[in-house]
Length: 427
Ligand SMILES: *Cc1c(COP(=O)(O)O)cnc(C)c1O
Image 1 (tube, rainbow, N blue to C red):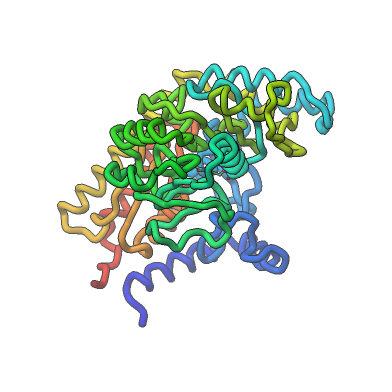
Image 2 (image 1 turned 45 degrees about the vertical axis):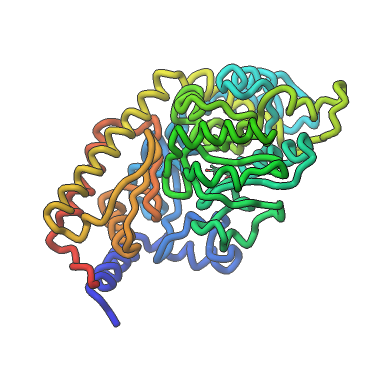
């Protein structure tokens, strides 16, 4: 049965198909050799995703020539905007000197110094190729240090492609998860911590603000209670700051005033290149120092690859100043507040769009809606207006997004929220 909402979605898909013929053809070509037409499942949306031809600053251009202001910022990895000159020249300079050494070099030292100076919990650090890998290594380090097997995580937590947890602690969770002895607790539930974290738990892995879980911030009392409980039972507290380290110069641990034993990093810190890192207090990280009797070896052909190391050094040195980090997050706070006001007004006016609401902290924002088709309509409306966010409502401001881009997004959302053409939602 076709409802008015379904009919509106149908029309949105038809409009999208008409303006994206080359992406449509590319999708069919892709599906023959890439299951689902892609190699990163989150990038799919119906009827098919546009294919990017090029990007610069805050703008994406697809192969059909459509232009979008990029409010997704590659799920936080694109914090610097597209092709920042300082990172581009650091990469090209590095390439002049060769790029696959099978040997150590000095750039990795410089990056480790920069990162340990920036994040309070990190005395020593090691690099990986992704945030997923960083979390796997941190868990392994904690299990080794404690001789315990339990790994406590929280509902809707996302720590990578093999570490994904559903909204119900009892499951289901990602079928691709690695087989650790996971204990899944309720996020932000202080009462539940004592039973969740016993003396058989090696570590607790938590995002201070859940990213993929819908930009859900933990309360400071929860993080403080978590810190205390881990100290009491001797479990390693790991903050997954792959996303949240962008929220303040010293990461969410600085912003919330709670210092973990280990921290994992990734995404934007590589300046948009392949990147991950895990670090922590010396007593834990020394497990990787054979001269101190450490028994762990961390493998990874590309762990110190010169492209990522050079791009990360340039990013931290030239782009990620405390002032600029504060600025992008303040701009996110403004966008968040203005979006909330748009939907509050719609709610007061009794409009169906009043069921949409934003969550998040600083430059991480997510729009939620109990009716997913309504959210999809908003997503397609924004594409029609040349504005790109994640299909699931997520956005991550980049430093290339200006106040006027923010004003454009708010105005576009407002046009949609108050549109008389929008269908009434059937009960
Ligand atoms: C993206 C993400 C990861 C995984 O990082 P990849 O580089 O995609 O493997 C881990 N944790 C959080 C919180 C993330 O947002």
